[in-house]
Figure 1: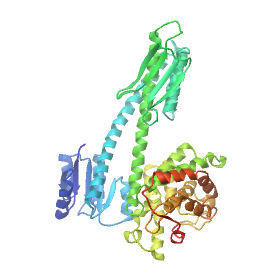
Figure 2: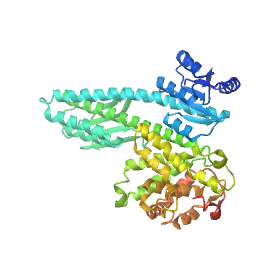
Figure 3: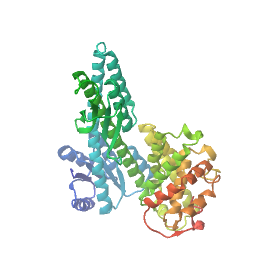
Figure 4: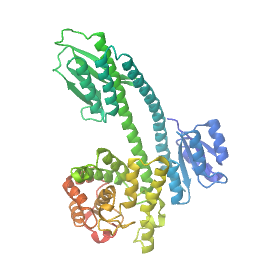
Length: 502
């Protein structure tokens, strides 16, 4: 991995100190201002990671990172600042700054941020390569379609079937559908011969996805590799028994080659999509941890809440009233966007956010603004990059996850179904996790105690439908709580201490 980083700070003492610290692990180039940084970038760059102080004479650090991004989009920016400013945090999100760290910054935090930034840089490079592969694949499919049209008069029926197969592959939603389409097409176009298609998939328990079609396979088989430029992803096997020949004609072999090639490309695209989804989720979690690391909610809080949201949504999906809204894509977006529910806490002063004692009425009023700060931050991202599904849900969740069914919540005092469904689901998931984990103001409650507390507030705090779905899947909640717990802790029922928190 390329460990080169550029560190920019106008303070000679700070620059020298941080450079020594970073040099333990990375190859460090320093600059005292934005102009010198751009010169270093032109001569010694590009750098995978650039770390810049915010407040500098002339061009500030955020503007510098934006300018560098314009020259080298794959460079990852980290901003250091001594001032907690919600507007600056929002601008960092809008400008795609990877991380904003408070000064002074310790070695572990800074080193960890650089490690994550380097990993993200590698993912960006891999994505560029994947995009090039996608262009190549699209051109291949276009050429394939052109070939089908040119040969239509000679092999009209078969070519129409191949063409339909290629179109079906483009709309396939997962790897199993790709394998099913390939098996059906091969069996049909080869006159009903037995066919078996297998694609290797490490995410499954058996290590592959498969489909058989037609008569039972014999010992006499013709095997075609499902190969891409990156290597084989599976195989297509055709039975040779009982059709009057122990080998396939050149025409049939050509058909199989076309089916195998298109199937391999489609499977590779599906693997790439999974990688992009993982990278997107990692980006969302990194953004959410900007707020979480300043708060007392650590461990696997975000991962547990995401799992709880999926469980409730899957149960609600059984209700015809919600079936049109809660699609599989909606659930995926909910699971990803749930991590953004407290992103607005990045704009809350440390004196309030980290206060160990009870907040005053004035401080509590400031704390409540985190929901609006979070929504405003995501509104800025949506305004610049578009209203994607998970960002829209994330915005609704950030703004409304403290609303209550009876209208006594905040910030808008919405009630009933006026509260977005995603926020109603997140509200219960977040409260359950808060109740069953250790917090500075309480011990961890037992699962039964949390059930009783939530059930008692159905129709007041929580949507009754959401509570019913939660109760129907309560064992799954308990299993997630135990599997993804942050560690052992005393269980209690200190309701007096927590009742006002929610």
